[in-house]
Image 1 (cartoon, rainbow, N blue to C red):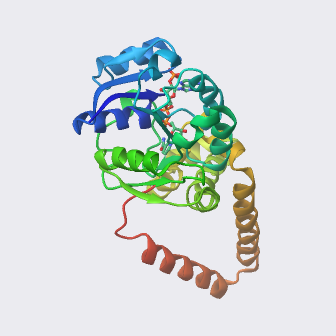
Image 2: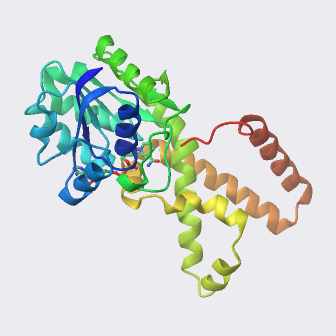
Length: 291
Ligand code: NAP
């Protein structure tokens, strides 16, 4: 058990981690920091936090473990703020959905404390936001990717791994570049496609009729377009190169499908759909949903 856990950003992910770790008796005290005192008070009232801190320095003072769980573009300023008062033996980690840009922000801000920072990304989530949406079981049997760099201390990695295991997750390690490429393909691109389809349809004159008839398939494909726009804006701008590559390839493949439809090439269309169905059935059926 550690003495003090500080969670910077107690929304869906930070709130869920706090609840999972409380259940596991991981820390004697859980303190949270966010911009809005009313959100922190709600997290205290819901039993997620012991204390809502009024400042970053209050949150991180004497902390053994500090977890950043804010939108990825907000991390830079917070690393700078944390660096002013972080205890020398504290371990830091984050839960951001992209890794290379956050590692650069941490490296620029943390100085000698950078070795105690372990980049992380839990592969669990939802299209909901805020402490009210958080729950203790969110990470159970889901993977957490850690992307330590050369400077990262092994002791810090072990401590962050132990925290996630206590929260019910399975920890894997990957290099940050591979992480950003893989998640551009399996997570970032699908979110952007869902946003793009809904936005394209809603701008048409007949959108109310279209949405009134939309059923299971539309709901399945577009569920993730209800995700937090700020979070996805930040992911897009933070992982530009990898996301652009995946979307350009997709656009080219979609153009080909448009041409096949226009030409009425039933055989080739069936071939593509069969290949895609086989791949999805092989890789996705019986797997946990992931994000
Ligand atoms: P969320 O529910 O909106 O929570 C974000 C929290 O951060 C809120 O408590 C917010 O509180 C606080 N916050 C926002 N900006 C801040 C700032 N500048 N300074 C201090 N606190 C700030 O978002 P989330 O879904 O938990 O996402 C948090 C992180 O987890 C993101 O980096 C995201 O990439 C990552 N992630 C999300 C998912 C997912 O499915 N949602 C999955 C994996 C990883 P105030 O508004 O009161 O400040």
